[in-house]
Image 1 (tube, rainbow, N blue to C red):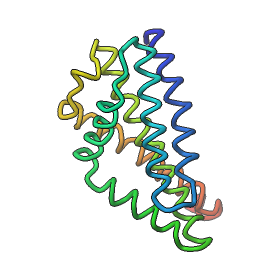
Image 2 (tube, rainbow, N blue to C red):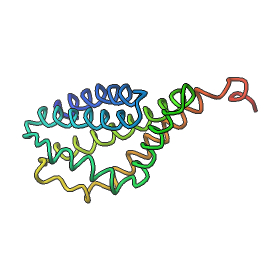
Image 3 (spheres, rainbow, N blue to C red):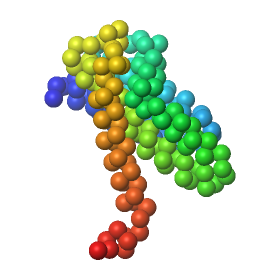
Length: 164
């Protein structure tokens, strides 16, 4: 792993925490916009590590296009979690952790896609979301499944988890 790649992975770790945090905001739909801002900042930082000129509009387009084809249900899923927060107390308690888990998975997959793109000499100008869609789906599914497993382990009482 190159030195730049190691530094970029550290940046991703920082931004997945930020995306988890802002996705816990209790205001309906504000969380989704905040996560997008965090992801855009992550792309700016990763591009700086690789000395690739950051193009904000293309970064926004990349985030939207990857989400658009890779996870058609992501928008509906994200809105549902965000809207669920509108239910007093219970909605926030249930919707926020689920939104955080999804945001972490999405941010992690997005960051890794761009690390691979920049490692191969790519720039924002030659980023082709169509070429990475299958790999992005795989990365997102891997992290989303891990979050689901962790959530089940954390919410299932120990005597039930350990039962034969």
